[in-house]
Length: 92
Ligand SMILES: [Zn+2]
Image (cartoon, rainbow, N blue to C red):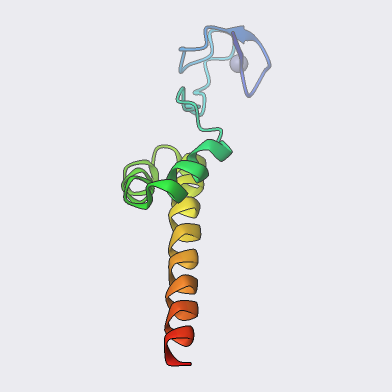
């Protein structure tokens, strides 16, 4: 169940126009865009998946996209760090 953004009348959650005041509702995305930490973990474990999810979701599910992209970034940062550490220890 949803409520009209303008007059507060109860309306069908799928309705785009309020039956009470007839004003158009902002279309709230029905998708789950919680941006849960799970996507960050996934992006961290499988950075390619994180990158793809970020590209696919960045318009429709910005929060999830951010979470997945963040995971990929964390992985990348960790990878670069390991390269630097590895490179430095190889030089010694
Ligand atoms: Zn209304």
